[in-house]
Image: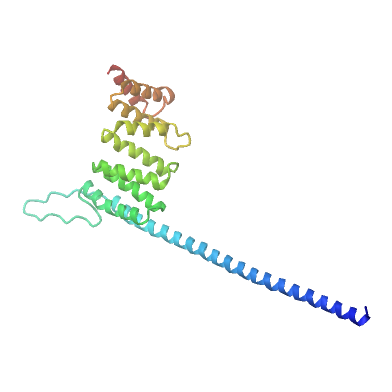
Length: 247
């Protein structure tokens, strides 16, 4: 092969190598650009979700604060006027009865709970709504709201646990003793719960007593006396234990 031909062959091979390198670079550049677009899009979505979640939490807390303002308002009973004097005008921001205050606060809590169900503010609002319904004697509705609190908060959270306490309480009020006893029993076995065990045992013992399970009631009260002798419930537990044993 002549020197000129060999030189041209080398030039062709070099040109092909350059072309291949250029093609690879162009392909990788497009790939890198595409990856960059995807990364930017993902970051935008994450940022948008974070902003939306922050906004939802802020709005939920505002709604909760509005409900709490009513719930914590003072109750000022009206003063009987002197004969011939007009009735005094109620003070702004007060209620004349506890029931009137609760009935005014309830729809605010329910609205916050329904608008922001998965936020901490919404869960707290739902828990308060359940408590108000129980205080008003609307036990069936309270049971529903307590169960919703547990569902939204998660059984292992503080509102999940206190929600189950409330749930069992209103079940006892409706004579649903088996359901309530099951809930209380489960709570007594929750080793990670911050709720004092002696308090849960006291409620469990009373549920057994109301259900007519005197032996179980006495056994449960006995646990408080034996395991928590310094408990604030110890004296009541001892007395109710003796009553259960007498039948």
